[in-house]
Length: 340
Ligand SMILES: Cc1cc2nc3c(=O)[nH]c(=O)nc-3n(C[C@H](O)[C@H](O)[C@H](O)COP(=O)(O)O)c2cc1C
Image 1 (spheres, protein in one colour):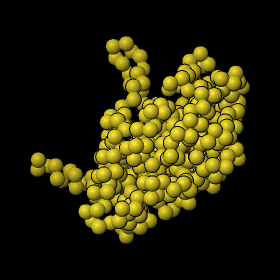
Image 2 (cartoon, helix red, strand yellow; image 1 turned 180 degrees about the vertical axis):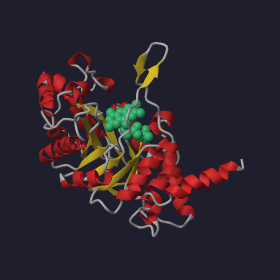
Image 3 (cartoon, protein in one colour; image 1 turned 120 degrees about the vertical axis):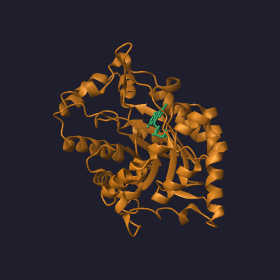
Image 4 (spheres, protein in one colour; image 1 turned 30 degrees about the horizontal axis):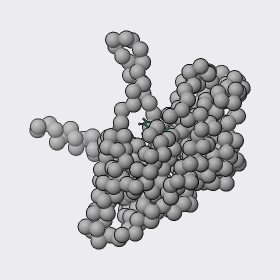
């Protein structure tokens, strides 16, 4: 079975990648992921706020953000609340972790930066590159709380961050995209135009709950389940073969079935965090075995044989990915349930 996969111009031994998670800061954990078959690992993010706080220029970043957006301070943690990240990963320790991961693993190490403003921290990408990262993933997490900031302004800001990082880097750059752009496909194309080599579809947003006992907001993270893959799978299918970049599918992997579906939709690689957190690094062995069994049972010698076969670009009738089957689906559901 030939599982070799191209992602961001890197040759991976298979299409399964461990996406960013706090446990990926631990070298022992990274080794277990590698031993179980992960083809690449994404380190947990280093946050813009951590870089700013460590460099003592938090106020400058805040001020720069405020130029673009008067409510910028709402996006940030105040300096006192900037945590040191998983396992105390401050910027210098993060660089050290990249170095050590690069030295001791034989699979590619993808560093992750998490920021939402174009100013003051992008040069950190260069340092991650120097520390040995094979590639960089940029997580553009932000919540547009300012009702006066238009979609156009938000898009321009995101594109500036990517452009800024691109100018700092020689290594490949992936953008972990939000699903909440009005025109997701157009943003995907524009990220490619300003230098992204790959897109992670999608970033998963935290929606706080209200604790009715304490009347406070709780920010616990629910791990994803297979049903959560529909939105990213739809967009992987809509983008595959239509944007000139690698596509990583992220969210909702529980079993090899989801991996196979994402490959059919057109993903170059499939990522998981939730399943690793639920089941430990060995889930990669199970996912890989399941993928191989599925391909073997159909005499398919490689994931390339199925990759993109169910994408929008390749289906004769891709209507279900758009409005096509929408009315029918609603009405069929009503009819089929009336008799229950
Ligand atoms: C506990 C936890 C920590 C995470 N930390 C990061 C992070 O540091 N950077 C990042 O880009 N994504 C982070 N993520 C998001 C995951 O990398 C992934 O995109 C998301 O969980 C969806 O994938 P999944 O369904 O396989 O969990 C985190 C997710 C979880 C559950």
